[in-house]
View 1 (cartoon, rainbow, N blue to C red):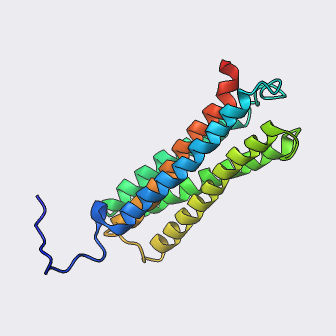
View 2 (view 1 turned 90 degrees about the vertical axis):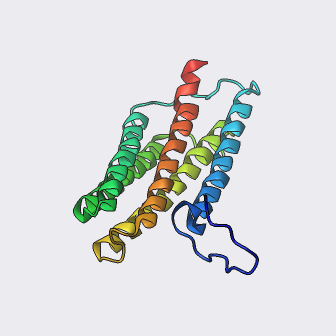
Length: 199
């Protein structure tokens, strides 16, 4: 049981671990971002239920690029988690390898997504499906890029020694955000690529 504090005590300014401001800030960020994706997925389902013709207009999206991209992104979460646990035990080299591998896998995901965009026979303003498709996948892509930037900073700071074995929270927050991005993609993938095949 935590020690009771009286009104005369000084409140902690910057707690550590799961009582720290950064931890709760990240949870609030994830809750907010998760709500945005929930709204976008709801918008996709709403538009699809309005009987505006065939949904999607050109049939279910091809899985040729989406499946490898999904495997890359999910794989990046596993290797990052492995690297985080190794770094927390003081194994700097494996920690760097885990972050570096996650960066490469995440970068490959972005490349595949952008290539898939370039092969689409429609543009953002063409119809309601194209709008929600690019809005949903694009919003997720922005989150992946933000996550890659966070991982790049973590990699550089670990490489030059600014983040060391004791900086558990730095790795925990970056890894938590990356896991969130990956889990959201599974919902986006199910919505965009799998749900048209189930209806």
